Structures are given as C-alpha cells and as structure tokens.
Length: 172
Image (cartoon, rainbow, N blue to C red):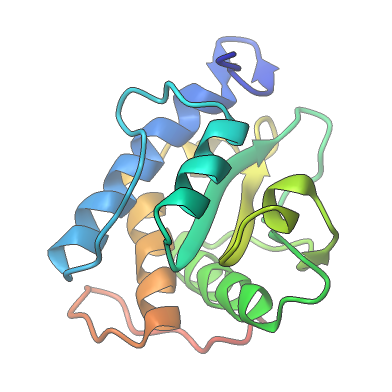
C-alpha cells in the first residue's frame, strides 16, 4: 500500500521527496544515466521498488527519505554493513549534498535495513534530513535534487558541468 511516510503539519515525506527526486532524475538523464523510477506517480511501495530493481538487473538503488519530526538536523545515509560500494555511494551523495546545500550530517549508518539488504545491487537509503529541523533545506527541492544527482554522477565517475565544484567523496 502507498505510504506518505513521516508527517509534520502540512508536510509529508512523500510530498517533500517527490520534487527532489524529479530534479535529480532530470540531471541524471541529462548526463546519460538510465533511470528507473516510479516518479512522478510515486505509486510503488518499497517492496515493489526492491522487486522491480532486482528483476531488472539495475546497478544502483537509491531511495530518498526524510527523517521524522523529532530527528536532529542532518543527512543520515543508511547502507548495508558489508557493502563497500554502498558506503562509497553514500559518501559521494552525502559530500555533494553537504557541499551544495550547506546541511550537516549525522554520519553514514551501516545497518542491515531490509531495503539495502534485499537489493541485489549497490544500495543506499538516503535520509535527506529531518522533516522539521531541515524543512527549509528540503523545500529547496531543485537544488537538493541536483546535489543528489551530482553525488551519484561522482560515484559513477561521470564528469559534469554543474555550476558548483565537484566535491571530495569524503564528507568532512
């Protein structure tokens, strides 16, 4: 079943992530990345997304989320504990987002969450920030989505001519 995710007042996780995802997709496709997604409908639950990714032999799985209203400020990527490539992907996205959005991080969490455990490819759950503490940053959807995309391009080794410098893959 469809799930709006966390909610804070008039804001829903799904409503905040949708334009961020759309902006990221636009940049990734501009640079030739083959993107599979349920955007803009957002009509697949996580189980269906993982099944789709596995059945289509995808190389990367990135799932954007925002943390609940009591979470502290900052990004919080989640990767499988045994996935070096997942950790590298999280580092690249995190570094790009921190550089371009001015948001801090709570680190990269190595945990065997179902979404990164049951995917057959490099996977990262990217918690973009707290739905309350980081709302102003999350509402800057176009810039945030571009930052996510540039991090993925960094991971893939695809050069781009974005208007911000390429970040170091190591978050500070």
